[in-house]
Image 1 (cartoon, rainbow, N blue to C red):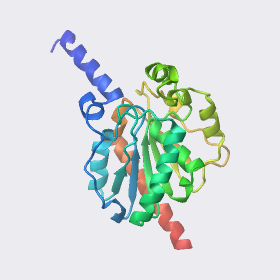
Image 2 (image 1 turned 90 degrees about the vertical axis):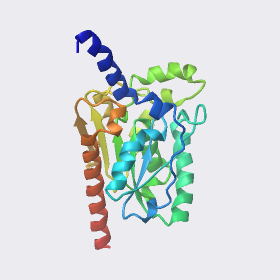
Image 3 (image 1 turned 135 degrees about the vertical axis):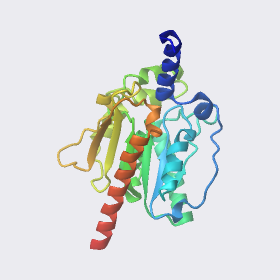
Length: 261
């Protein structure tokens, strides 16, 4: 294959790695096959997707987790055109807090893990730090989450008509009021948080995907990977190994804590 023919293919693959499949992520409905058995598994995982995406981005991750024995559930976060997530981070954290209270009561689900992609990781952190998630969450793994904000949020500001359609791109600008407040808050020490970020992520460059532990916050950890695009983090097999190990380690800690009480 000539270089001229290969270049468009490489460009397409690179864009798909950063943004995901247009047909499978953006054009498909947010509806998924509903399963009510997630709370019956020994360990349960909530998946939270990011800005302007749908939960279809989790198809591969969900299949892998289920194959490994995890219960899995996710939320339709709604938004623009009733499926593209553009609500504010704080609004979504409050929304999932209310939903999770009902779900945990209905299914007798005590605690669960969260895996959040991109803005989904910020929603999860807000839930844990400000809306009672510390009473329910065992661990949090974030993929390509801008824990320090990200300069590319400026594109989202433009996409959302300068904030008229959504405020959350402004929230993800580095040093925004939201980002300063979230990182100023104390992260609950009993909930391990692992941030996975990539050197090839153009939407959340590595320096912005790092957690910044304060003194004594040894429950916060960073894992850097190479050559994986922003959305590809949700389905890359190597990233999945990191996610699964983080879940296994957190589960073992909770078993140990239970044995001591």
